Length: 257
Length: 218
Image (cartoon, rainbow over all chains, first blue to last red; front, side, top):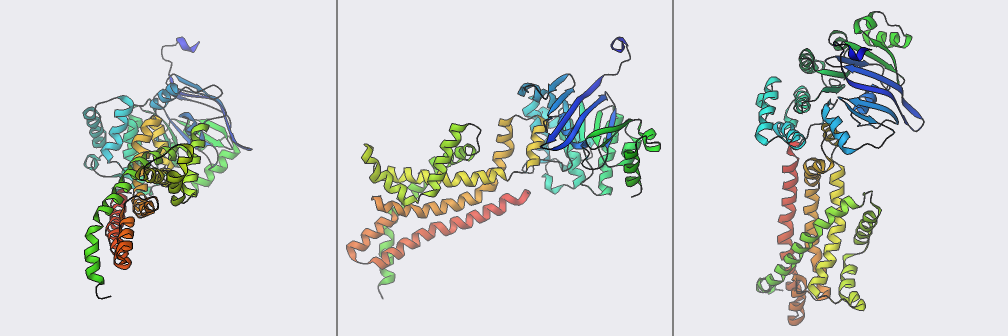
Protein backbone atom coordinates (compact mmCIF):
# COMPACT_ATOMS: atom_id res chain seq x y z
CA UNK A 1 0.00 0.00 0.00
CA UNK A 2 0.95 3.59 -0.32
CA UNK A 3 2.31 3.95 3.22
CA UNK A 4 5.44 2.10 2.14
CA UNK A 5 6.00 4.32 -0.87
CA UNK A 6 9.00 6.63 -0.26
CA UNK A 7 7.42 9.58 -2.06
CA UNK A 8 4.22 9.59 -0.04
CA UNK A 9 3.10 13.11 0.77
CA UNK A 10 2.04 13.55 4.36
CA UNK A 11 -1.31 15.12 5.15
CA UNK A 12 -0.88 17.84 7.74
CA UNK A 13 -4.62 18.23 8.20
CA UNK A 14 -7.25 15.53 7.95
CA UNK A 15 -10.91 16.18 8.53
CA UNK A 16 -13.15 13.12 8.65
CA UNK A 17 -16.95 13.07 8.47
CA UNK A 18 -17.49 16.42 10.10
CA UNK A 19 -21.13 17.25 10.92
CA UNK A 20 -22.64 20.17 12.75
CA UNK A 21 -26.08 21.65 13.30
CA UNK A 22 -27.45 24.55 15.29
CA UNK A 23 -30.81 23.11 16.33
CA UNK A 24 -32.64 22.29 13.11
CA UNK A 25 -30.21 24.30 11.02
CA UNK A 26 -27.67 21.86 9.57
CA UNK A 27 -24.47 23.73 8.70
CA UNK A 28 -22.16 20.81 7.90
CA UNK A 29 -23.09 17.37 6.66
CA UNK A 30 -20.35 14.77 6.45
CA UNK A 31 -17.42 16.90 5.34
CA UNK A 32 -14.08 15.14 4.79
CA UNK A 33 -10.93 16.84 3.61
CA UNK A 34 -7.18 16.21 3.47
CA UNK A 35 -4.53 18.88 3.24
CA UNK A 36 -1.13 17.61 2.07
CA UNK A 37 2.04 19.13 3.46
CA UNK A 38 3.17 22.22 1.59
CA UNK A 39 -0.09 22.64 -0.31
CA UNK A 40 -2.45 25.58 -0.48
CA UNK A 41 -6.12 24.69 -0.32
CA UNK A 42 -8.60 27.41 -1.21
CA UNK A 43 -12.20 27.04 -0.07
CA UNK A 44 -14.85 28.91 -2.01
CA UNK A 45 -18.61 28.90 -2.19
CA UNK A 46 -21.64 31.03 -1.46
CA UNK A 47 -21.99 32.52 2.01
CA UNK A 48 -23.66 30.16 4.43
CA UNK A 49 -22.10 27.20 2.65
CA UNK A 50 -20.11 26.21 5.75
CA UNK A 51 -16.57 27.14 4.59
CA UNK A 52 -15.72 29.18 7.67
CA UNK A 53 -17.37 26.62 9.93
CA UNK A 54 -15.11 23.87 8.55
CA UNK A 55 -12.08 26.09 9.10
CA UNK A 56 -13.18 27.04 12.63
CA UNK A 57 -13.81 23.37 13.45
CA UNK A 58 -10.23 22.56 12.46
CA UNK A 59 -8.89 24.30 15.57
CA UNK A 60 -12.04 23.70 17.61
CA UNK A 61 -13.20 27.31 17.78
CA UNK A 62 -16.46 25.61 16.83
CA UNK A 63 -17.13 22.19 18.22
CA UNK A 64 -18.48 19.79 15.60
CA UNK A 65 -21.30 17.45 16.60
CA UNK A 66 -19.47 14.48 15.15
CA UNK A 67 -16.39 13.65 13.14
CA UNK A 68 -12.67 13.69 13.64
CA UNK A 69 -9.95 16.28 13.15
CA UNK A 70 -6.28 15.48 12.87
CA UNK A 71 -3.60 18.14 12.66
CA UNK A 72 0.06 17.14 12.64
CA UNK A 73 -0.72 13.88 14.41
CA UNK A 74 -2.96 15.37 17.12
CA UNK A 75 -6.38 13.74 16.82
CA UNK A 76 -9.60 15.06 18.28
CA UNK A 77 -12.83 13.15 17.99
CA UNK A 78 -15.94 15.26 18.52
CA UNK A 79 -17.80 12.43 20.22
CA UNK A 80 -15.08 11.79 22.81
CA UNK A 81 -13.98 13.95 25.71
CA UNK A 82 -11.47 16.56 24.59
CA UNK A 83 -8.46 16.82 26.88
CA UNK A 84 -7.18 20.38 27.35
CA UNK A 85 -3.65 19.18 26.69
CA UNK A 86 -4.57 17.65 23.34
CA UNK A 87 -6.58 20.74 22.40
CA UNK A 88 -3.65 23.02 23.23
CA UNK A 89 -1.29 20.86 21.16
CA UNK A 90 -3.65 20.91 18.20
CA UNK A 91 -4.10 24.68 18.39
CA UNK A 92 -0.36 25.19 18.63
CA UNK A 93 0.03 23.29 15.34
CA UNK A 94 -2.51 25.48 13.55
CA UNK A 95 -2.08 29.24 13.15
CA UNK A 96 -5.27 31.15 12.47
CA UNK A 97 -5.87 34.47 10.74
CA UNK A 98 -9.29 36.09 11.08
CA UNK A 99 -11.30 38.43 8.91
CA UNK A 100 -11.19 41.13 11.60
CA UNK A 101 -7.55 40.46 12.68
CA UNK A 102 -8.46 40.05 16.39
CA UNK A 103 -5.32 41.74 17.66
CA UNK A 104 -5.14 42.82 21.31
CA UNK A 105 -5.75 46.59 21.25
CA UNK A 106 -4.25 47.29 24.69
CA UNK A 107 -0.82 45.95 23.71
CA UNK A 108 1.80 47.31 21.35
CA UNK A 109 2.42 45.43 18.11
CA UNK A 110 5.58 43.97 19.68
CA UNK A 111 3.69 42.66 22.74
CA UNK A 112 0.90 41.28 20.57
CA UNK A 113 3.40 39.01 18.84
CA UNK A 114 5.83 38.35 21.70
CA UNK A 115 3.40 37.57 24.53
CA UNK A 116 1.96 34.38 22.97
CA UNK A 117 5.51 33.12 22.30
CA UNK A 118 6.43 33.67 25.96
CA UNK A 119 3.26 32.11 27.35
CA UNK A 120 2.78 29.24 24.91
CA UNK A 121 6.30 28.30 23.83
CA UNK A 122 8.04 29.42 27.03
CA UNK A 123 10.47 31.67 25.16
CA UNK A 124 12.28 34.35 27.15
CA UNK A 125 11.29 37.92 26.45
CA UNK A 126 14.51 38.56 24.54
CA UNK A 127 14.14 35.46 22.39
CA UNK A 128 10.50 36.31 21.69
CA UNK A 129 11.29 39.92 20.81
CA UNK A 130 14.09 38.87 18.47
CA UNK A 131 11.73 36.50 16.65
CA UNK A 132 9.04 39.20 16.54
CA UNK A 133 11.37 41.80 15.03
CA UNK A 134 12.56 39.29 12.44
CA UNK A 135 8.97 38.59 11.39
CA UNK A 136 7.94 42.25 11.42
CA UNK A 137 10.91 43.16 9.27
CA UNK A 138 10.00 40.42 6.83
CA UNK A 139 6.47 41.86 6.62
CA UNK A 140 7.89 45.32 6.04
CA UNK A 141 6.57 46.50 9.41
CA UNK A 142 9.80 46.83 11.38
CA UNK A 143 8.99 50.43 12.28
CA UNK A 144 5.59 49.55 13.76
CA UNK A 145 6.80 47.51 16.74
CA UNK A 146 6.04 50.20 19.33
CA UNK A 147 2.73 51.31 17.83
CA UNK A 148 -0.67 50.24 19.07
CA UNK A 149 -2.78 48.24 16.58
CA UNK A 150 -5.39 51.02 16.27
CA UNK A 151 -2.71 53.25 14.76
CA UNK A 152 -1.98 50.76 11.97
CA UNK A 153 -3.97 50.42 8.74
CA UNK A 154 -6.16 47.37 8.15
CA UNK A 155 -3.61 45.80 5.82
CA UNK A 156 -0.86 46.35 8.38
CA UNK A 157 -3.02 44.92 11.16
CA UNK A 158 -3.69 41.79 9.14
CA UNK A 159 0.02 41.32 8.44
CA UNK A 160 0.68 41.76 12.17
CA UNK A 161 -1.93 39.07 12.83
CA UNK A 162 -0.19 36.78 10.35
CA UNK A 163 3.15 37.45 12.08
CA UNK A 164 1.57 36.68 15.47
CA UNK A 165 0.39 33.30 14.22
CA UNK A 166 3.67 32.50 12.42
CA UNK A 167 5.73 33.32 15.51
CA UNK A 168 4.47 30.14 17.16
CA UNK A 169 5.85 27.98 14.34
CA UNK A 170 2.57 26.41 13.16
CA UNK A 171 2.47 23.41 10.81
CA UNK A 172 -0.53 24.82 8.97
CA UNK A 173 -1.98 28.30 8.59
CA UNK A 174 -5.75 28.71 8.50
CA UNK A 175 -7.04 31.91 6.87
CA UNK A 176 -10.69 32.89 7.40
CA UNK A 177 -11.51 35.46 4.69
CA UNK A 178 -8.31 37.38 5.43
CA UNK A 179 -8.97 40.17 2.93
CA UNK A 180 -12.75 40.53 3.19
CA UNK A 181 -12.60 43.43 5.65
CA UNK A 182 -9.99 45.32 3.60
CA UNK A 183 -10.09 47.68 0.65
CA UNK A 184 -9.08 45.79 -2.51
CA UNK A 185 -5.94 47.89 -2.77
CA UNK A 186 -4.90 47.10 0.81
CA UNK A 187 -5.91 43.47 0.44
CA UNK A 188 -3.15 43.11 -2.14
CA UNK A 189 -0.49 43.70 0.55
CA UNK A 190 -1.92 40.80 2.51
CA UNK A 191 -2.25 38.56 -0.53
CA UNK A 192 1.41 39.24 -1.37
CA UNK A 193 2.47 38.05 2.07
CA UNK A 194 0.30 34.94 1.69
CA UNK A 195 1.78 34.22 -1.73
CA UNK A 196 5.27 34.48 -0.28
CA UNK A 197 4.34 32.10 2.54
CA UNK A 198 2.97 29.62 0.01
CA UNK A 199 6.16 29.79 -2.05
CA UNK A 200 8.16 29.03 1.09
CA UNK A 201 6.22 25.79 1.45
CA UNK A 202 3.82 26.71 4.24
CA UNK A 203 0.74 24.48 4.31
CA UNK A 204 -2.31 26.73 4.06
CA UNK A 205 -6.09 26.50 4.07
CA UNK A 206 -7.72 29.69 2.85
CA UNK A 207 -11.42 30.51 2.93
CA UNK A 208 -11.70 33.31 0.41
CA UNK A 209 -13.68 35.21 -2.17
CA UNK A 210 -10.48 36.21 -3.99
CA UNK A 211 -10.84 34.20 -7.18
CA UNK A 212 -7.45 35.39 -8.47
CA UNK A 213 -5.72 33.97 -5.40
CA UNK A 214 -7.71 30.75 -5.62
CA UNK A 215 -6.83 30.32 -9.30
CA UNK A 216 -3.18 31.36 -9.22
CA UNK A 217 -1.82 30.41 -5.81
CA UNK A 218 -3.80 27.42 -4.56
CA UNK A 219 -3.04 23.86 -5.66
CA UNK A 220 -6.36 22.54 -4.51
CA UNK A 221 -9.78 24.12 -4.78
CA UNK A 222 -12.66 23.06 -2.58
CA UNK A 223 -16.14 24.26 -3.51
CA UNK A 224 -18.76 24.14 -0.78
CA UNK A 225 -22.51 24.67 -0.83
CA UNK A 226 -25.22 23.88 1.72
CA UNK A 227 -22.83 22.29 4.20
CA UNK A 228 -21.26 19.89 1.71
CA UNK A 229 -18.14 19.81 -0.43
CA UNK A 230 -19.67 19.64 -3.90
CA UNK A 231 -16.48 19.66 -5.90
CA UNK A 232 -12.74 19.62 -5.26
CA UNK A 233 -9.57 19.29 -7.26
CA UNK A 234 -7.27 21.30 -9.52
CA UNK A 235 -8.32 24.99 -9.33
CA UNK A 236 -7.88 25.80 -13.03
CA UNK A 237 -9.68 22.64 -14.04
CA UNK A 238 -12.68 23.43 -11.83
CA UNK A 239 -12.80 27.07 -12.84
CA UNK A 240 -12.68 26.35 -16.55
CA UNK A 241 -14.82 23.24 -16.51
CA UNK A 242 -16.97 22.97 -13.39
CA UNK A 243 -18.76 19.61 -13.11
CA UNK A 244 -21.51 20.62 -10.76
CA UNK A 245 -24.39 22.90 -11.65
CA UNK A 246 -24.15 24.67 -8.26
CA UNK A 247 -20.43 25.40 -8.90
CA UNK A 248 -21.25 26.77 -12.33
CA UNK A 249 -23.86 29.08 -10.90
CA UNK A 250 -21.54 30.31 -8.15
CA UNK A 251 -18.59 30.91 -10.51
CA UNK A 252 -20.78 32.74 -12.98
CA UNK A 253 -22.02 35.00 -10.18
CA UNK A 254 -18.55 35.90 -8.84
CA UNK A 255 -16.80 36.20 -12.19
CA UNK A 256 -19.48 38.43 -13.69
CA UNK A 257 -19.14 40.96 -10.92
CA UNK B 1 -26.74 85.79 59.19
CA UNK B 2 -23.73 88.09 59.08
CA UNK B 3 -21.85 85.63 61.22
CA UNK B 4 -22.39 82.77 58.81
CA UNK B 5 -19.07 82.98 56.98
CA UNK B 6 -16.93 83.39 60.13
CA UNK B 7 -18.90 80.54 61.74
CA UNK B 8 -18.22 78.25 58.79
CA UNK B 9 -14.56 79.23 58.90
CA UNK B 10 -14.38 78.37 62.62
CA UNK B 11 -16.27 75.09 62.40
CA UNK B 12 -14.56 73.77 59.27
CA UNK B 13 -11.17 72.94 60.86
CA UNK B 14 -12.89 71.11 63.74
CA UNK B 15 -14.50 68.76 61.24
CA UNK B 16 -11.23 67.62 59.64
CA UNK B 17 -10.90 64.72 62.10
CA UNK B 18 -14.33 63.52 60.99
CA UNK B 19 -13.31 63.85 57.34
CA UNK B 20 -10.32 61.67 58.06
CA UNK B 21 -12.54 58.95 59.50
CA UNK B 22 -14.88 59.20 56.47
CA UNK B 23 -11.91 58.75 54.16
CA UNK B 24 -10.57 55.84 56.20
CA UNK B 25 -13.96 54.16 56.06
CA UNK B 26 -14.06 54.66 52.27
CA UNK B 27 -10.53 53.29 51.92
CA UNK B 28 -11.17 50.09 53.85
CA UNK B 29 -14.55 49.51 52.20
CA UNK B 30 -12.84 49.66 48.80
CA UNK B 31 -9.80 47.67 49.93
CA UNK B 32 -11.93 44.70 51.03
CA UNK B 33 -14.95 45.31 48.81
CA UNK B 34 -13.19 45.38 45.43
CA UNK B 35 -11.57 41.91 45.67
CA UNK B 36 -14.97 40.48 46.64
CA UNK B 37 -16.54 42.43 43.80
CA UNK B 38 -14.04 40.87 41.38
CA UNK B 39 -14.75 37.41 42.82
CA UNK B 40 -18.54 37.84 42.59
CA UNK B 41 -18.28 39.27 39.05
CA UNK B 42 -17.01 35.84 37.96
CA UNK B 43 -19.24 34.04 40.47
CA UNK B 44 -22.58 35.24 39.10
CA UNK B 45 -21.84 33.54 35.76
CA UNK B 46 -19.82 30.60 37.12
CA UNK B 47 -20.62 27.00 36.20
CA UNK B 48 -20.10 25.90 39.80
CA UNK B 49 -23.56 26.09 41.38
CA UNK B 50 -22.50 26.74 44.98
CA UNK B 51 -20.12 29.54 43.94
CA UNK B 52 -22.82 31.01 41.71
CA UNK B 53 -25.59 30.90 44.34
CA UNK B 54 -23.38 32.48 47.00
CA UNK B 55 -22.31 35.22 44.58
CA UNK B 56 -25.85 35.92 43.40
CA UNK B 57 -27.02 36.11 47.04
CA UNK B 58 -24.40 38.68 48.04
CA UNK B 59 -24.81 40.74 44.88
CA UNK B 60 -28.60 40.82 44.90
CA UNK B 61 -28.94 41.54 48.63
CA UNK B 62 -26.12 44.10 48.51
CA UNK B 63 -27.78 45.97 45.66
CA UNK B 64 -31.36 45.34 46.69
CA UNK B 65 -31.13 46.43 50.31
CA UNK B 66 -30.33 50.09 51.08
CA UNK B 67 -26.89 50.59 52.63
CA UNK B 68 -28.64 52.08 55.68
CA UNK B 69 -30.49 48.79 56.29
CA UNK B 70 -27.28 46.76 56.05
CA UNK B 71 -25.59 49.19 58.40
CA UNK B 72 -28.33 48.96 61.04
CA UNK B 73 -28.44 45.19 60.64
CA UNK B 74 -24.73 44.84 61.32
CA UNK B 75 -24.72 47.13 64.35
CA UNK B 76 -28.12 46.61 66.00
CA UNK B 77 -29.18 43.30 64.45
CA UNK B 78 -26.17 41.04 64.87
CA UNK B 79 -26.02 41.35 68.70
CA UNK B 80 -29.29 39.34 68.69
CA UNK B 81 -27.27 36.37 67.49
CA UNK B 82 -24.45 37.07 69.93
CA UNK B 83 -22.23 38.89 67.43
CA UNK B 84 -21.30 42.31 68.73
CA UNK B 85 -19.17 44.55 66.56
CA UNK B 86 -17.80 48.01 67.22
CA UNK B 87 -19.55 50.79 65.33
CA UNK B 88 -16.59 51.30 62.99
CA UNK B 89 -16.27 47.59 62.13
CA UNK B 90 -19.99 47.14 61.55
CA UNK B 91 -20.11 50.24 59.33
CA UNK B 92 -17.11 48.98 57.42
CA UNK B 93 -18.64 45.50 57.00
CA UNK B 94 -21.91 46.91 55.66
CA UNK B 95 -20.11 49.19 53.19
CA UNK B 96 -17.80 46.34 52.09
CA UNK B 97 -20.94 44.37 51.24
CA UNK B 98 -22.46 47.27 49.30
CA UNK B 99 -19.14 47.90 47.51
CA UNK B 100 -18.71 44.22 46.56
CA UNK B 101 -22.26 44.01 45.22
CA UNK B 102 -22.12 47.15 43.08
CA UNK B 103 -18.57 46.74 41.82
CA UNK B 104 -19.29 43.09 40.90
CA UNK B 105 -21.81 44.35 38.37
CA UNK B 106 -19.51 47.13 37.13
CA UNK B 107 -16.59 44.74 36.70
CA UNK B 108 -18.80 42.14 35.01
CA UNK B 109 -19.98 44.80 32.57
CA UNK B 110 -16.38 45.73 31.79
CA UNK B 111 -15.32 42.13 31.31
CA UNK B 112 -18.26 41.32 29.07
CA UNK B 113 -17.49 44.26 26.83
CA UNK B 114 -14.11 42.78 25.83
CA UNK B 115 -14.80 41.92 22.17
CA UNK B 116 -15.45 38.24 21.50
CA UNK B 117 -12.97 38.31 18.60
CA UNK B 118 -10.09 38.86 21.02
CA UNK B 119 -11.16 35.87 23.09
CA UNK B 120 -11.23 33.79 19.90
CA UNK B 121 -7.86 35.23 18.94
CA UNK B 122 -6.31 34.08 22.20
CA UNK B 123 -8.06 30.70 21.94
CA UNK B 124 -6.76 30.16 18.41
CA UNK B 125 -3.22 30.93 19.60
CA UNK B 126 -3.62 28.19 22.20
CA UNK B 127 -3.55 30.42 25.29
CA UNK B 128 -4.74 28.85 28.52
CA UNK B 129 -7.93 30.16 30.14
CA UNK B 130 -5.85 31.57 32.99
CA UNK B 131 -3.52 33.46 30.66
CA UNK B 132 -6.46 34.74 28.67
CA UNK B 133 -8.02 36.18 31.84
CA UNK B 134 -4.72 37.54 33.11
CA UNK B 135 -3.41 39.18 29.94
CA UNK B 136 -6.45 39.89 27.77
CA UNK B 137 -9.76 39.92 29.65
CA UNK B 138 -9.01 41.42 33.08
CA UNK B 139 -6.66 44.23 31.93
CA UNK B 140 -9.15 45.39 29.33
CA UNK B 141 -12.25 44.71 31.41
CA UNK B 142 -10.83 46.69 34.35
CA UNK B 143 -9.78 49.48 32.01
CA UNK B 144 -13.35 49.72 30.75
CA UNK B 145 -14.78 49.47 34.27
CA UNK B 146 -12.30 51.84 35.94
CA UNK B 147 -14.08 55.18 35.31
CA UNK B 148 -17.37 53.82 36.64
CA UNK B 149 -15.55 52.23 39.60
CA UNK B 150 -14.08 55.64 40.40
CA UNK B 151 -17.55 57.14 40.11
CA UNK B 152 -18.78 54.50 42.54
CA UNK B 153 -15.96 55.36 44.97
CA UNK B 154 -17.26 58.95 45.08
CA UNK B 155 -20.77 57.71 45.87
CA UNK B 156 -19.35 55.40 48.52
CA UNK B 157 -17.48 58.27 50.12
CA UNK B 158 -20.75 60.16 50.36
CA UNK B 159 -22.53 57.05 51.65
CA UNK B 160 -20.13 56.87 54.60
CA UNK B 161 -22.25 59.69 56.05
CA UNK B 162 -24.82 56.97 56.84
CA UNK B 163 -22.39 55.64 59.43
CA UNK B 164 -23.42 58.53 61.64
CA UNK B 165 -26.55 56.50 62.49
CA UNK B 166 -24.40 53.89 64.23
CA UNK B 167 -22.31 56.47 66.08
CA UNK B 168 -19.15 56.36 63.98
CA UNK B 169 -17.50 59.75 64.61
CA UNK B 170 -17.18 60.55 60.92
CA UNK B 171 -17.73 63.89 59.18
CA UNK B 172 -21.53 63.91 59.31
CA UNK B 173 -21.76 63.03 63.01
CA UNK B 174 -19.09 65.60 63.86
CA UNK B 175 -21.13 68.25 62.06
CA UNK B 176 -24.28 67.05 63.81
CA UNK B 177 -22.74 67.18 67.26
CA UNK B 178 -21.28 70.65 66.61
CA UNK B 179 -24.72 71.78 65.52
CA UNK B 180 -26.53 70.32 68.52
CA UNK B 181 -24.09 71.70 71.06
CA UNK B 182 -23.95 75.24 69.59
CA UNK B 183 -27.27 75.40 67.69
CA UNK B 184 -25.23 76.57 64.70
CA UNK B 185 -26.66 73.82 62.50
CA UNK B 186 -26.57 75.85 59.30
CA UNK B 187 -22.84 76.70 59.30
CA UNK B 188 -22.02 73.20 60.58
CA UNK B 189 -23.81 71.41 57.74
CA UNK B 190 -22.54 73.89 55.14
CA UNK B 191 -18.99 73.23 56.34
CA UNK B 192 -19.58 69.48 56.15
CA UNK B 193 -21.05 69.83 52.67
CA UNK B 194 -18.05 71.88 51.56
CA UNK B 195 -15.69 69.18 52.80
CA UNK B 196 -17.64 66.39 51.07
CA UNK B 197 -17.62 68.46 47.86
CA UNK B 198 -13.92 69.26 48.20
CA UNK B 199 -13.18 65.54 47.88
CA UNK B 200 -16.02 64.44 45.57
CA UNK B 201 -15.75 67.06 42.84
CA UNK B 202 -12.02 66.64 42.09
CA UNK B 203 -12.45 62.85 42.32
CA UNK B 204 -15.19 63.02 39.69
CA UNK B 205 -12.93 65.11 37.46
CA UNK B 206 -10.23 62.51 37.92
CA UNK B 207 -12.56 59.72 36.80
CA UNK B 208 -13.49 61.67 33.65
CA UNK B 209 -9.82 62.29 32.94
CA UNK B 210 -9.02 58.61 33.48
CA UNK B 211 -11.76 57.62 31.07
CA UNK B 212 -10.28 59.84 28.36
CA UNK B 213 -6.78 58.61 28.97
CA UNK B 214 -7.65 54.92 28.98
CA UNK B 215 -9.69 54.96 25.81
CA UNK B 216 -6.90 56.43 23.71
CA UNK B 217 -5.74 53.13 22.12
CA UNK B 218 -9.21 51.81 21.45
